[in-house]
Length: 613
Image: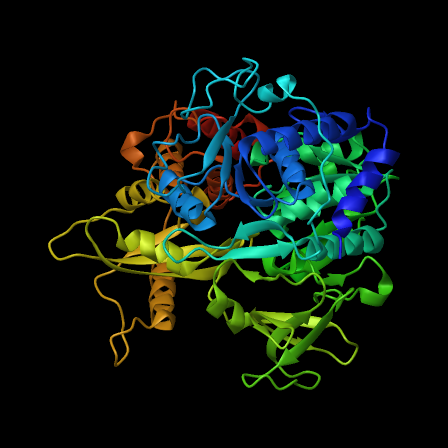
């Protein structure tokens, strides 16, 4: 069967004005420009020798470039492998090797062929992503295109003649894309999504959310995750609507995000529970931000939505939240709580739409109402499998049912409730972090004898990553040095929010670390710390301590002049931790203006002084 995605894309191209903005971001991208570039990329792919069913890696911080390349690859039947543009080189190398791709499109300052030596296949071709010109060739044979234009995307497109993408050989079983669900130390697991899977999910989104060409979607979630890529960019394209991504998310743009919902007449806002929690802290100045004539509802995805936050947010901001459940393996979502009354019940993940769900025991026997077991899904949106991992695929795909690894139960009204997870994964701020990945990195650090990682409940992040480290004999370790060494090997999002250095690990008869007892030990340490903790030192010293914890650095390396530019580890996520830490340390609640004003530790001191007087 011919891929339904091709006809859907062709229809959008025929029926949408070329001047209409598809992506409103740092660089706006119109429908006309998008489809013109897709046609020129078709020529480029042929020149590069890319054929149907080949794989091409795409990794970029530039939304416009990434989305354009992704659409062009899918339209030409080439499998897009989308990777995190912030992943450290060690992780990038591991994923590039696992992808075994024929082409790589990477930001010009990201990596060179020399950086990836040993993990590239012999016939692989690299194309840097930049602005308009390439400063110098980054790989042999691609310094200039045939007509002398710079061999950098998108500049190279100016010298290429558009070609009509062919539909020949592209079927509904063609792999549209691969997203990796792990990859720091464990064997990378690449989720294969077919054209049929992708089209089924898009049709569900469009129908269930009531999306039309007049809809305006805001979604700032990362494009290397399915929640940003499919739940944002691709569904916007197939619906012929506009996607708003004016900023890369950070806490300091949060007030602008909320204002932008009204300013851009957004109809659907997709985000994660941790962002909803941060919005709830903005104060009364934003109470009317969601009560616009255009906004239909807010969609919460990627992590557990606390019922108290859910209820209080809806009441305070007078807007409905649609809570959805899914995984990378189900393209994106399978169960929906809202927006219609038939699927809405607060505290649940709703009911399956265009798919089936059931609860089974360890033997695979379907359980009755109110019994807890493993949640299983079946539908056209379920992945083909894990790339080149037949054994792992067989473990989760059984008799047409995908075993999610999540523990749940179904009530007598047909609503599903999530209670926990069988599989070991931490969802922090909507990002999946695998404990074995974090533990593997920690174990590789000098002076570390052993490590263990787990998740603990957190009001803001849903869960936080916590690790305990056992030093090698006669070795002195510090949290700061461990954090700095960790960030040289893995992405910041995987860095534990708390690291504890212990003298010993509780172990079972076989010598295996008993994680439950390690958790108990951490809770005891935290309780003991709270019991003796008293504010000590002046305001500057207390701010330094909060900053040191948040940025995983030594307090002696900080000063009141420290800011994001001169402080290693001060990024958007760490900035959120810093602000929350200040509120807790000084017992205050910062206003949106306070949040906007804090750019340095000196700014933080000024805010604390003003709030304390």
